[in-house]
Length: 257
Ligand code: LHQ
Image (tube, rainbow, N blue to C red):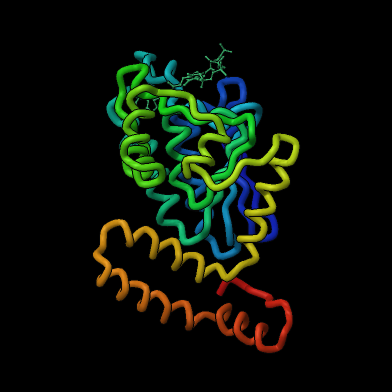
């Protein structure tokens, strides 16, 4: 059985975390396969990525049975070899990545979702910074993204107390973009990803880069960064098509170049 389901359809890569009986908790094989599939997403045919979970959970984070198994891969390299590359690959991927959180997202499962470009959730989903409850430190970029998304105080409290945050509350506090009713969630979240997959891919990649750069640059530096990226965006075929279609009062057809 494959712990990651992967399919590319009409420019959209669909990645499904697939250990439903364990709420898609990450074991070594699943983490490494996820990395491989993220690498495959850099191919030109992929113009957007959609990540979700099989069954009723998104991901319960690290498989705790595996890290406690004396014959398992051990705890020493889990963060550096399993989770850090996943977060880096998602951020470096020059495509928009949608996390479609279909159920509970805990520990590394929550923080991998939160590093994605657009995070949406089913109304019955929830987010838990589960680390503190077992004596661990938030990882997978959680200490980087969560305070930036919801502010220091709330992030600090959620990470220390390990409270379960409902999807509605996550939307209210700006942790995620939108919540959809459970019966509409799959189609509505896929529609966001499909829309992105037909948009100007290079322009979206430069937007992602500009947002990432804004974290570590001054205003003056960032104004220069925006200028540089705008020149690059203006050189794309999709910009030319977008402007031309606007002037001709027709719907543009973007090709991702
Ligand atoms: C699980 C897990 C799980 C194994 C549910 N492992 N089986 C980095 C570096 C090094 C070390 C460790 O970790 C990390 C990163 C991290 O992610 S640390 C955080 C690890 N995750 C957690 O601590 C969350 C543990 N899980 C839970 O608290 C609950 O399962 C949640 C709140 C996620 C869901 O609760 P329920 O909806 O009540 O489901 P459940 O607890 O009944 O779980 C269903 C099954 O999944 C169950 O198996 P079973 O065979 O009894 O039906 C659980 O044992 C299994 N499962 N999470 N992380």
